[in-house]
Image 1 (tube, helix red, strand yellow):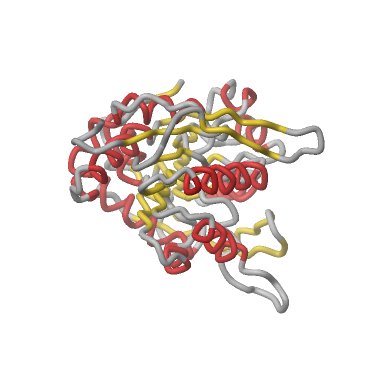
Image 2 (image 1 turned 120 degrees about the vertical axis):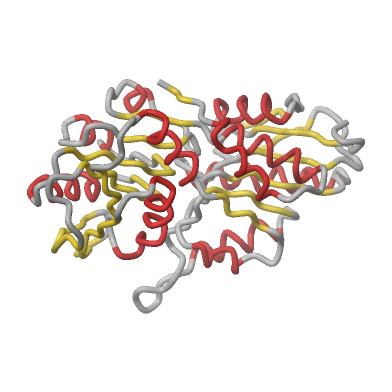
Length: 327
């Protein structure tokens, strides 16, 4: 029971460490779900206790392996609705396929919309996510969706660990991320610069120019996703060539595909601060330049606010108490 309502919390396989922090912050213990993997790769599950009449919350990012994690979620949702749960909310810190949010060429899919449709057809009643790649993805849903920003949490890390921010500047790695970077700059009360780049092909970027004065400044590059880290490293090198003295980075989702952690470790970047929307690999955890802060306390408190019918926005009034650093 939570606030006189019957509530159950489940965690699927994508991010057990974050799920533990959410459980502690919400005060809800995990209910048991038995995941089954058949010999041909099919997924099955069995919920070990009754969920009839309960408000059910499930934690699952659709990160790598995205297809497997997505199917786990859809199968779980089907099981919960067939077991007569009162409502089902998915806490999806990282929304996979979010970068396929529009057609840039003829005959391309809009996969983010397809995933939104699958989620709704499966019977999920509400989605909580962190920094959707495009805010317009919220419009793909006909159910409530909360898109929490990670900027207050990440910016608070720099406020607590850097005594003098007067010589810092926030840098957006492209025009599309300027709004996100501006929010970050406003929180730290520092100026903003933008890197003008082009993408000749996916996962490759070329820096064309830098809009703003970065000479003699310490730069913090702000983005939502770090995938292969190629764009990040190229941008950091361009900033130093333009006269910057140091370059840091802050990003919400540490996708870290291929050799991204090695690329960061061998780069000119001083520190890369990310959240735990995606579980880090052992290689990324061993990289001295990568530091992780947790979204768990914010997400745990969001459960309590939803159950108690309180505004979610109130959580951000006490965001400074939520910095949990994972070394």
